[in-house]
Length: 334
Image (cartoon, rainbow, N blue to C red):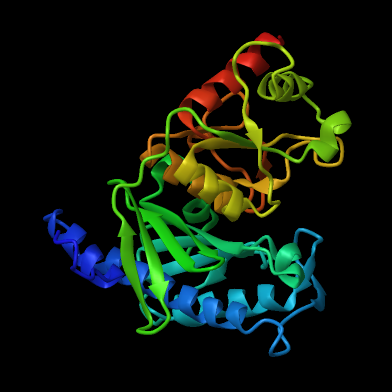
């Protein structure tokens, strides 16, 4: 690819599609729909503070969390751009109690699971936030989408990715053949390829964890891990601490520079806080495709078969060597 060539996300996906003889174009179209939803959300995020989109919406979602106005706007953007596009049969969102059936006359063959605006508690203080999405093929044969379609292990994902709304808007995705990053050029309204075949360094510079929960972590092994990263144990595992508190932002930094993000189970969230289907699993797919790893502390995230739509899990994700070190430490107890 010449250095001067501008490659839009549409052109790139079409090139990827041609590498697979049996491709029908439906997955490509679904990725375009997601990119369009991201543009709509990015426009609203850029205008935050100038128009009335900041603050709480006055409702709580199924998680019992206060919805922000932008949570609702982002969720509606996905429903409007993806729900009636003909590519999906059913959608699952963090903001909805149950599955939302697509409105198109002919149900599509894909299932979309997504967190429309991750890190929304940071909206009012202008910290980077993001969108996370996961795509599966439906397993039911016809008709409306079923719970069986929605509750699939992460290993069965056909595509996944995230959008980061920060100083620039970036869309990063994988369809099982590497991880590719695109940056939105607001002047032309297009996502342009900025990193092809992104790889996460095997050993990271940083560790990311909310240490304010130190005393309430269910597995005390995480305290040993953090001590090692601080250099307390003298095992040569020293790292610098970086924690934004916005999952997509923390994950994206570690993807580029190398590092590991941890969110253990803790006293108030004994099964973990992050949602398996539309937070942990899609980011785990991206991490593995970039040469990284992801675990719940004992087993790979992608091998977990979900039992409910909003199931939670602990998460350790990032540079492969770091994840393996943490897994060994938790297993050994020292």
